[in-house]
Image (cartoon, rainbow, N blue to C red):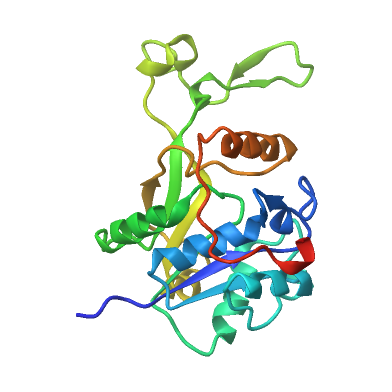
Length: 251
């Protein structure tokens, strides 16, 4: 039986607000989008790596680093509030080929690497009951210790009802609390059928992919960007090797 076909999508809209021009901003000599493209290419699991962008500039950069940009994403699918399902459906419907699976390889996770993609795909294929797989990591701040305030902010109560517990979670040590995981942006893989069948990118049954080390590190704001630079400088995190010179307009 042949392996299912897969396409890798790198979302790279132009309107990043918290880190302006984030996707083409240089980290260690290359734009952030280059590391996502290299991750997808080096994984060796995709029949095609496609960058979805609304920007001609980002499209030129993406092509330089080896990705396909067959068309631009419409502006209405590239706002700060646009759900992924909009551009995803638009893109899948316009590709010349059809694929069994798609993956989202986001620019925000430069330390993820090709091995994570291969592990994730193997895990999804080994979980036939799942519609998709999504990257997660253990929370650092447990939701059992979260509170909400009353209207005048004089009294607070736990966000999660703990009245049935012998000992409230907010009064316990982290190590004694039930493990809780939060999603990160490192990897999403799904069967393409779920887009048409459920109108979502993940479907109804989602498998967990537990990231390791800095694989789940997200660059979401300027503090994250500065930390990413430090991690690279001190060798604590490794970027995918980029096998071509920097895009010429950055020289």
